[in-house]
Length: 149
Image 1: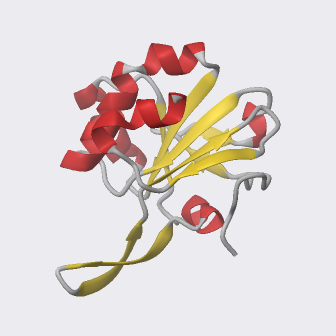
Image 2: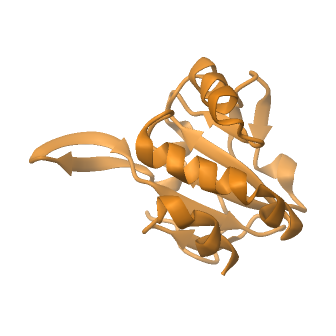
């Protein structure tokens, strides 16, 4: 069952890059940008994460907490954050628990080959944990503009 605007965003409990547990319920009262991306240190994911980094103050001014999610490890996330100087947390969803709750782990195909992978999707969640918007056609180099429009 796919999530839609108006649904309550599923809660989760997953570690960030420093091994600290993060829950969505622990962020109640804050608006959240929850962005799912395929892989640390790949061109599209780097462009997307750096666009959010470069506009982080505007996102914070709009009241958003930014969280990136991929199935990479905490160690991989830490390297990505250090290399790209990212000011927000990345969640290590290695067992795909969060991906499965949000429907972002799915069959993809590239060059005719089918495989399971992350659908690049961003969920905007309001202060009460309700999904305000789902961005499926992410413009990696201009993602903040899609969020703050």
